[in-house]
Image (cartoon, rainbow, N blue to C red; front, side):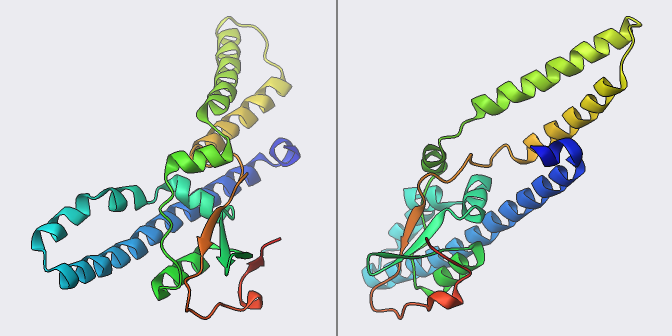
Length: 205
């Protein structure tokens, strides 16, 4: 809050950076899941010899629900996934670590949905809409006063600039969950050697 008042351009930079990071996480995760889904499709075809079944897989609930969006990207970047090894918390996974473990086959690709993430974060668009409406109302009042020839103070002009930047930041953070109240557990596969905690970026506490 203090940074927004005194250095609003830093907030815009940070919001843009988080948005682009979340977008890249979602894009890379969808690519990783696509490769895993293709392997599963080939395994199903080889085991059951059912060509018709392979045609149904792209429309299955698993592939549609597993496609990641910006919400998933924000959730992952915020530390929403926790690695469990032998039933014990091991570490909070960063996006690159989660993608690497999925590619290596050490963990399954999480299939959490947007609704589940929003329920865990306990955040919704109502509070964001109220804040934006308040900012827009202030802007309308300022324009109306200027049109009527009433004086506009320097403080109000400065507030207008901060308001505009705040609206931009809200746009970048619109899909960002409020917080991570309950992380999603990712289980390490049995029979696979667990990674050393020192090799992971952040240890779970």
